[in-house]
Amino acid sequence: MRFNGYRALTMLQRGQIPGPEAGLAKVTMVNAAIAATDLGADVIGLDALEPDNEWSYLISFLPGLKSAGGTEQILRNTVGERVLGLPPEPRLDKGVPFSELRTREREEVA
Figure 1: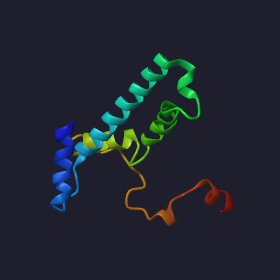
Figure 2 (figure 1 turned 90 degrees about the vertical axis):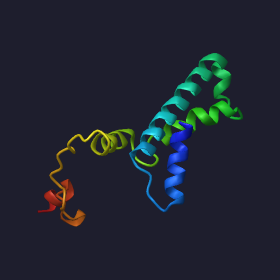
Figure 3 (figure 1 turned 180 degrees about the vertical axis):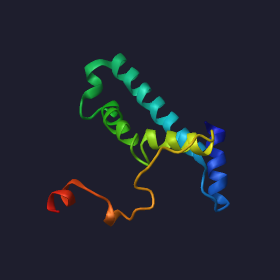
Figure 4 (figure 1 turned 135 degrees about the horizontal axis):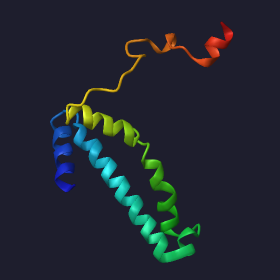
C-alpha cells in the first residue's frame, strides 16, 4: 500500500492523474479501516460508542469514506475496465445531455 501511495504521489508531482490503482488503494484502505474499527468496537464494547471517545468518531466517520471520491462499485468498474480490460457496463444514456435525460417528473408532465 505504501508503494502504491508513492506511485500516486509521483504521478501527481509530474502533473499526471493517478491511475485506477489509486482507486483500488482507496477501496482497500477504507475497508481495512472499517474492519479495524469494528474489531476495536467488539473489544472495547459499548464504551466505544460514548460521544467523547475516539472510537465513536471513527466508527461513525469511516463508512462515509466509502462514497467519498466515488463509490466502491464505481472504482471497481474503473479498475475492471482500465486494468483488466473488461468491457464497460452498457449505458443507454451515454452521449445524451443531462437536460435531455428522461426522468419520472418529465414523463408525468408530458
